[in-house]
Image (cartoon, rainbow, N blue to C red; front, top):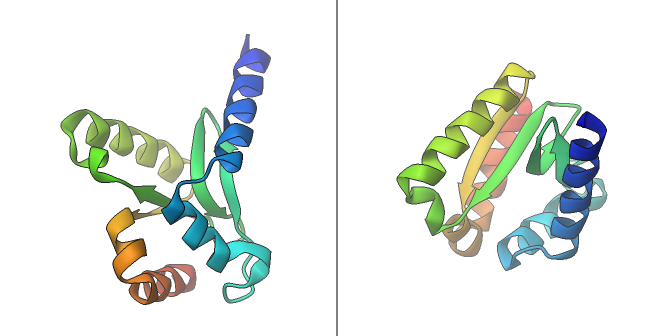
Length: 118
């Protein structure tokens, strides 16, 4: 049963990597190939039963991109549950709004750099 769930999550993550949102594409362009302060990031990566948008394992930093639907109560509750699981596993979670990627990518980059230094 557990193996089937892991297989499902891995398949879903693979599908998400093939179908990034425009905002995820912009951020991935900055983070990929150690372009960002020479830190290695992974995208749409399964951690436990969740999929992190972006993750730097060396610094235990997860970056989650959020669209407008994350303002809704149900999404906020699910996000809090996910964040709690990630934090329990030792990760720091940085949430970034899609609008910030589109309107202030330099500010987002600066925030990520500061989070990597913690």
